[in-house]
Length: 122
Image (cartoon, rainbow, N blue to C red):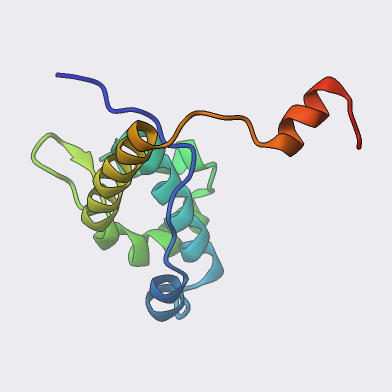
């Protein structure tokens, strides 16, 4: 099985965030975003809530309060790991777009980055 390339950016739908998460507590929103980013980087997250609590550095009380909202967003899959299905689809789509762009666009360094690298401020 080939390893998927890393994407250093992710798409976060502000509309989805506003509609679905704004009624959650601040702790639940932050936990959701922590797990979202963790899944984006790792492909999945641990199934054990205690492990998630430790990785995200929440106290038991904080995690218990937030987990009530967040748990259903990251169900346990057949392989025993948690995944947000919409995020899996978005990641796969982003990989396709990234690969398509890398084949069609020449790799160049933007002028402003190049100038900073050589110390030219003009």
